[in-house]
Amino acid sequence: MIALLPQALLNYRLQNTNNLSTTTIILWTIGSEITLVYLIWTNEILIIAATYAVFIAIALFIGCQIKYYDQEKQPINPSVSQKSKYFQFLINYMLLLFLCFIFGILLYYILQLTKSHLYMSVLIGGIIPTIIDSIGYFPQIILIIQMRSAVGFSSLMVLTELIGFTAGTISICLEHHIDRIPMSSFIAMIIFNIILLVLTLCIFQHTNKEENRTQSDYELGQDSKGI
Image 1 (spheres, rainbow, N blue to C red):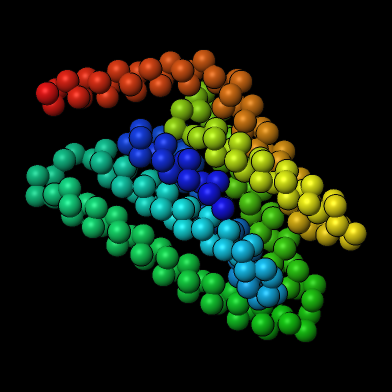
Image 2: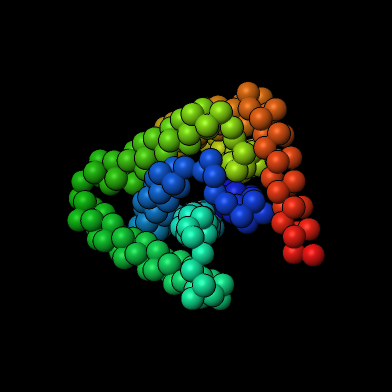
């Protein structure tokens, strides 16, 4: 539910979204949106659908952070106040929520049309989001390798997701009938999260420490200027 929250907090602390793949966030949002609508359509337990709804809300918030911090890199316009920037951030967030709502309604209608064809419903609600979520990891992995740094990408987020997917896999294994679709999805997510965890905590650990120190020095310098 709150797997993306550490990433949002890290973005705020660093005041940037460097080394965070926009494509990954977009794909994760789309995959989660499809899953959410499918869960609602199949009348699954409300708490499960709620977790995906919260995930989407935080993902959209991060999307707005990416837009906001990209604009901050542009030359400062004296006529634009900080308050107006925050207001624009809020407008963008509400717009994204509205677009997700519209997309959800359209997808729900499509699922209704496939009601007589169970395989189509499973394809749309089970297989397609799994593929999208899995593909979503690749841009982030490639970006970290290209930049040779994982600074700006939250290892706590990866660890949270890893724990969640592992718990989900265990719970499925304990059932009398193992559902292959979520099982395969969870296993794929576990593998990708392990790769990200290795990249952030092992391969680029030294680089992360150096860049974090540089970031801290920069922030201290900015504070001293303010004083």
